[in-house]
Length: 324
Image (cartoon, rainbow, N blue to C red; front, side, top):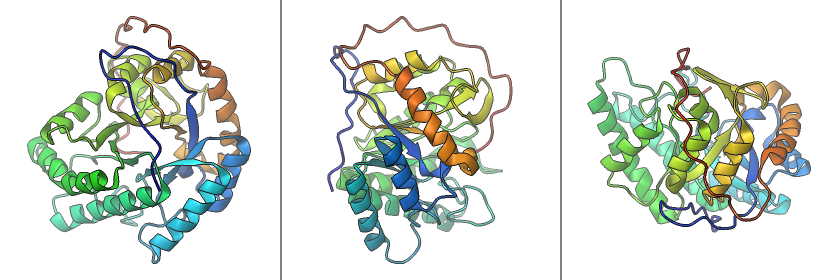
């Protein structure tokens, strides 16, 4: 299947009329539902797509007959009219005892290879589903490992994944994650330059993480990240506290955030990310979409950008060390 387009406006290009933003919901926030039930729920609620986290309960990437199971999911997505992005943030899919382990930074080459294999599987799944991107993250700095060594491991580990993504025509969208080696937008550019700015390398921008950690407000983060945006995650959050919150329970002002996102020309999914709310996933999915639609700009010409706001204050608490 052919992935949907994912252009973003490059610096210096004029603003143009934009399509409506496309909203999805992450299956990591619907972990108590069977995948088919989760997809049906999202279609019934009116979502445009789904952020599909490959996990033991939702299209297990390590179980037998992955290709055949992926074809069935692709058929179901087509029948329901849902777009999809493939996410790889499952907590224990590789190691039942170590959250998000092993990572691309682990000291043991065999452990790093297991994470690389998962990402290669994710690229194949994404190609078969017609997904608009594959999401991934760096991992935390292992004890006893210096930063230079970790950055080299990250670049080396991602090289075969980027080769596969290039061949498949699927962007690899790396997410800055509080507490990880690659934690900020500036860190993304460190990786991009180290890899030689490959065309397949893009960015997953989590709006809550911008509120939590970045020096600029979220709307300004979006404008700065626009040329590299390939996937967007969204939820509410408070400054300095890495806790994914339902909309209205944090500090983010969403209308300017969504206006800035629409102005970039981003056409991928904007996926609600509430992994710790699966116990009430259908309830939160039902509330999130009306909230986002009410906060989103109407279709039409993009207004001129507002001047960047002053950076908000320094984080008031230590962010969590890994993806929730």
